[in-house]
Image 1 (cartoon, rainbow, N blue to C red):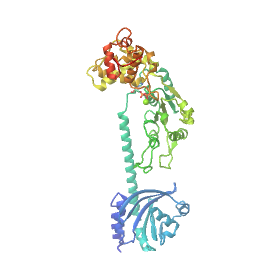
Image 2: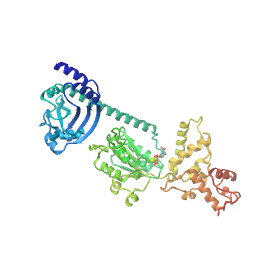
Image 3: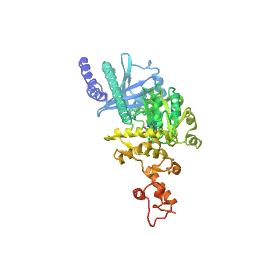
Image 4: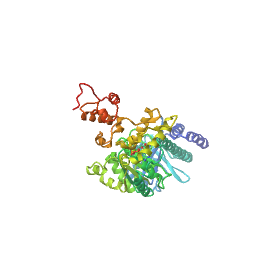
Amino acid sequence: MDENKFFREATLRICGSIEIEKALFDCLDYLKNFIPAESVYLHFIDLREKTGVVYAMADGGGGRQLNIRFDYPAPVWRLIGDGSDLPEEVLLDRADKSTLGKHMLKIAGLSGIRSLMMMRLSLDSKEVGVIAFEARGESRFSREHLHRLRLLQSPFAVAISNSRRYIELLELKNLLADDNKYLQQELLSQKSDEIIGADFGLKHVMQQVNKVAPLSSPVLLMGETGVGKEVIANAIHKYSSRRNEPFIKVNCGAISETLIDSELFGHVRGAFTGAFENKRGRFERAHRGSIFLDEIGELPKAAQLRLLRVLQEMEFEPVGSAKTIKVDARVIAATNRNLEDMAAEGLFRKDLYFRLKVFPIYIPPLRERACDIPALTQYFMHKKYREMGFAEYPSLAPGAVKRLEAYEWPGNVRELENAVERAMIVSGGKTLHFDDSGFEKPRSVWEEAPRDAEGSPVMLDDVISSHIIKMLHRTKGKINGEDGAARAMGVNPATLRNKMRKLGVPFGRGVQYK
Ligand SMILES: Nc1ncnc2c1ncn2[C@@H]1O[C@H](COP(=O)(O)OP(=O)(O)O)[C@@H](O)[C@H]1O
Ligand SMILES: [Mg+2]
């Protein structure tokens, strides 16, 4: 046998492809002429973690990339020790009779009488893996075969090290693509960070924000839906020293219970069906920055426990991984539910509630800060004017702002924003009246405005129709005249009828309002 030719030909095949499984297959195909191997396995021993990984294998049928992690049983581990006792090469005539060999066969899923030949691979005195050749039957490999394999130690080591770097690069690329996608989404949902009412209705809130923002303690934002909790969470991040680091948002109510752990803490490839790649969780992304846990009251109990641990120890394990990740993320939580009640009813972990409410900030509803309504209205008119591309800036009809100020705003700032948008569409971007009868009523009437099961306000139209029905009950179904519903609501009877037709409120003969 010409050793130089053997080395050259085998090396060409070993280094012929960056995909290690293909290289292994090509190489095995050639080596079969010199070594009676049936299959070849590449694996790596992690001495620190005391685990092993099979990367790739090849047999007559082809090559495969694998990622099988395994623990060494104690007897095998005793053989391996700290690695220094492990021989450079192992030749086993009956692998199925040796402790180490039996383990190797088991990992490879092989049985019966087998011969095994293994060699450690190192590059720059760094261990890069172990290559193992296997064949059916007893004493298939000789000293001469081992010598031939030894000739190829360096090419194998170079190939496996390159391939591992290549796989790491691919994983990094995936991570970056993942990050990129995430950032794009965040960019799309970026809103202006102006806070209207900071010196008026939200003055007290802003004082608290200024106090707590520079610290790293968790903040709990409480308030009805649409009051601006997210706006305030943004402000806390912006006013902190973390402002140039990520602000990561999680809507705990919008992610299914099965995915919430993976969303928050990430997962490793193969952790569950559909986990094709490693994925970083939101906590990891929020490292050095802030994480905004919106609707924290919706967080499932299992995730609550994990969150508690992050708050206490600032560490967690991704789903399917044993590796602990340390993070430094400031937690800002928000809820429109009463966490104290939920904790008392056992719906929310008490320990987590106490941990979160270190610094609670309550954001009052819009109806309690009517002084902000004029500025907010103008702000949203500007915003919509730009977004909707109207030719001219709209004006407000006399009395329009008064009507808005008198309204109860069950949906708070978000509802006001929607109302402005609606009025601009209705008026074609000219003069805004806000003369839907809903805005014309004194506040007190709205105390019983219908809400859904969670106490959230329902659609504006529903609010309006239920109010009309209530007024009709009061006037016993009468619409016209001094004591009619139209007069009571300050609108023209024809307008009211139109409205009722539109909203599907029944009227006329045969309909009884008593
Ligand atoms: N003080 C404010 N200044 C400007 N816009 C606000 C203010 N408060 C709320 N908004 C706007 O109102 C909408 C609802 O606010 P958001 O923070 O999402 O409320 P929440 O999280 O409490 O439900 C958003 O479009 C937000 O930009
Ligand atoms: Mg919100």
